[in-house]
Amino acid sequence: MSNEKKTPKVKFFDGVKAEFKKIIWPDKDTLLKQSIAVVAVSIVLGVIIALADTLMQYGVNFLTM
Image 1: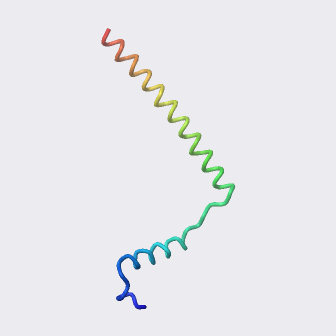
Image 2 (image 1 turned 90 degrees about the horizontal axis):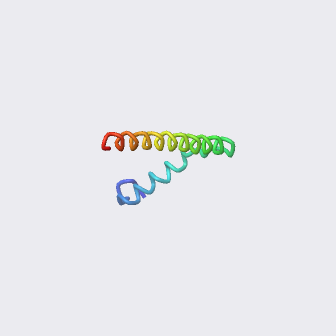
């Protein structure tokens, strides 16, 4: 079957199949290290945002009293 006779859907899925062959999955150690880094950064940013929110709330309450 030549490329001219393929429908757009078939061409799309052929492209998807070709791209999936290029994927390099991380090994266990890399996956664990990256997962720990994501969780740690998320926790740190959550704490920073919570502190900023608390300070801003305190400032607004101070100004409106």
